[in-house]
Image (cartoon, rainbow, N blue to C red; front, side, top):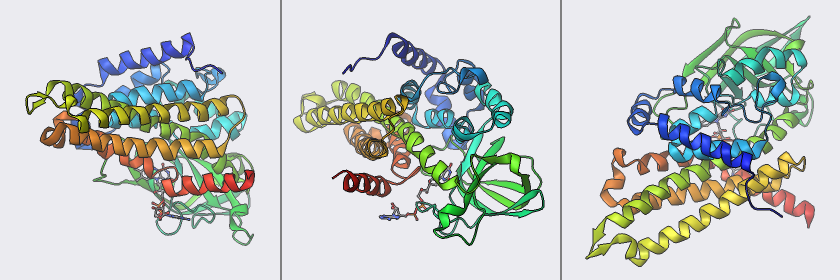
Length: 384
Ligand SMILES: Cc1cc2nc3c(=O)[nH]c(=O)nc-3n(C[C@H](O)[C@H](O)[C@H](O)COP(=O)(O)OP(=O)(O)OC[C@H]3O[C@@H](n4cnc5c(N)ncnc54)[C@H](O)[C@@H]3O)c2cc1C
């Protein structure tokens, strides 16, 4: 057992840290957060340095590292700024499908541009009516006419939808089969395909630099060449996808918790009340000590989940534990950070309120905390 990062991992972590220190200016972050604007220039800069393509294969322009290195980068970015960090690290969201299940032609078409930061992608599962936590049945259908599939339906709450160059979408290709999830298929669709339209959703509570939107499919025509993975295996591919990407959400949560904690700790040493720094008041000092303990536990659970995946021993139970625990720690810690700063914590310029608003999403997207607990339970029952 070795709990130390390698030299290479440390240098990635430090390089991302330096990048964020220089580029993630608090004023810019607040402005983009207010305007709900994606940080395109920063995304491209981060991509040029390889920070958004750490686990992508080298033959397509990626860095050829694993999920641990990816988590280190996500964590550092979200520690520096939770909204910019999420927006940038989620820029290639959905491209993991192409890496894992894509054909050679799909890889050649999409991955080099994703790695360079010229492309942004999206993955669309959620629908307005039933499908959110439950993706076992899709109202969005793909129906075969001759050599073409016609896609119809609406996807909602899709990260990057308004700015994505392509989207990987989960559809129902067989409406008769039972259980219904055995009739779901993934397609990759380019943004300028006729019949595809996107709209932007506004006024999110947090991660406002990460733009979110709806995608409408009105007789969008695609071919077999755009199927990602196997026909009618889309549900299974999606489950595998989430077992990996959820670790990235856990890393977002760890970074956010750490970032807010650092602001609170510094403040607590400087702010005085009743004749001494508030850190010396047990309720604040011990609260901060307890918070950093939980952050450390969440961090190592996240690294373990990532390490298992890198070792080819993916354990969905550990992934679910990491996401569920880290997101809880992020929400709790960012809340306590506001409390530590008192009234100042309630002001945007002190940044902890943004960390808190941003942290909440980690308990919701890519599977809510309730769904993570159910996953843990499912695997526990299988094991014992
Ligand atoms: C900012 C943002 C970005 C997003 N990005 C994407 C994206 O890129 N792609 C995409 O496809 N989706 C995306 N989503 C959607 C997100 O993944 C879903 O919101 C999430 O999976 C939950 O689905 P839902 O909102 O429909 O909630 P529901 O499924 O309606 O759940 C509502 C509540 O019921 C609980 N619940 C549901 N089932 C059970 C159960 N069996 N047992 C106990 N409790 C249960 C849930 O935990 C939750 O608390 C995004 C959402 C947001 C807010």
